[in-house]
Image: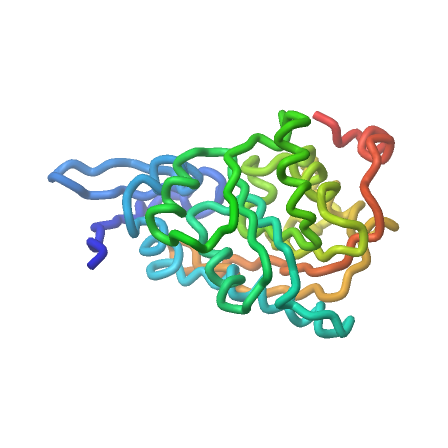
Length: 259
């Protein structure tokens, strides 16, 4: 039986308004430990903490939502979801992979930048992934790229990992280009990232990609990703589409996305 953890949310303006800096206190051995929500290396090392924090307390639904809209998009095209070979970018401890496995995908390849994510997936969900790579896609070697590409993935999914510095533009596009042409793409982003007033690099990249010739959108849906620590809904967009072609370096340079 997985141990239940004592989690406390602070009450302050920073926590309420800056999602990227949100934190909580973990009470263990009588000493409160401050951990940011994006300190995944620390969270993954503690069995059950990630699930209790984001799914039990904050009611995150994104793994189910994004996989569901991806499946819906594929059904529109009369293709078979169970034949997909999926690259799970930012795979973490395997919650998205587990959802995909339930739906019967053919092959599942996990990728994350931190070894703690791989170790947590092996500990909590052994056997979900056919392979799991610990790689920085901004610094991907040719050998690693060839190894990942050898799985011939025709789908990429990334959930709750975009737009807060977790997966940079370059890493996202590198993964996008590894997917076979006419493959499927499923991801989610915070709703404000589609607002023209958001000038961050990732926000601009997503808007350009959605309206570019490189991706055809099949399904886009605004939904409640999870609750904030104050109990307010945080809304995201879930997006599914089909890749038409690799995104060339010239496109990224012309939009000033290479950083």
